[in-house]
Amino acid sequence: MTLGDMVDVLHAKVLVGEEKLDTPALTACCSDLMSDVLAFVNEKTVLITGLTNPHVLRTADMLDLKCLVFARGKVPTDDILEGAADQGLVVMTTKVTAFTACGLLYEAGLRGVPIEWPEGEEQ
Amino acid sequence: MSSFVHEEYPVAKGDYTRAGEASTDIKRRLRQLGVSSNVMRRVAVASYEVELNLVIHSDGGKLTLDVDTDGVLLVSEDVGPGIPDISMAMREGYSTASEEARSLGFGAGMGLPNMKRNADEFDIQSEVGKGTRISMRFRLT
Image (cartoon, rainbow over all chains, first blue to last red; front, side):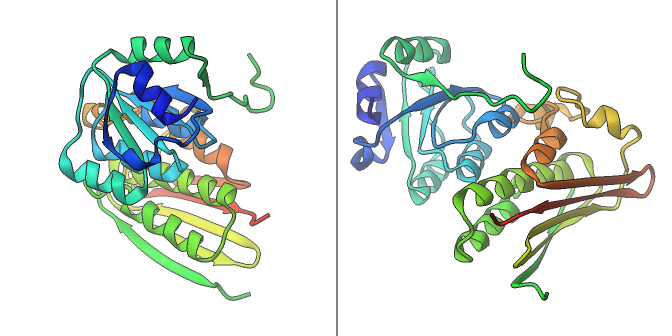
């Protein structure tokens, strides 16, 4: 699946990075807790979130994420979008909820980020 | 061995707007030095977490970055209030963060465990009423 395919699946509107929609999306994660994202995401992936503050952008920067999807029609402020453009991110917004966005993407073949449990903490 | 890079970043209590600026600069410097993306990302995540901890929990402090041929050394020092029970603070899910921090997506109780997970060596010392010092080393290979 490419980021462009995600736009189709989610009926999303691209806010930043229209020229990068041929980038492959291999995995995704969904969270409003940036601490959790920082803890478990260890690869270049897609983040689906309802949080639109600057820390989403910082988190994306620290982890080298490549795409942000804002659910429930949320659109971040212009300064955040400008920052996203500077970071080379693709940003899109979809009218569906985060739950539905995940369901649609999963149904289309996208899978979650694999979690590596620390030694002795396997569940 | 002298440092290739030595930088200090003051971090103010409660300054959520600037929280993350030091970590952004640290990551930029590591990229300039040609540090591998894997190591760079681990340092960046640990740095961002510890910087946020300074903003959320401390009365102010600073981050110090040193890079030499042995690796990256990241030290966080603050002026209080100190952690009464470090073993509780190290537990995933345990948090004393404010509502403001939580509303921004933090305070999930993942900060310290996440730093430990990303660093090759992790040390925390804290004294109530005095402050906390966290030292993290990252090998370059």
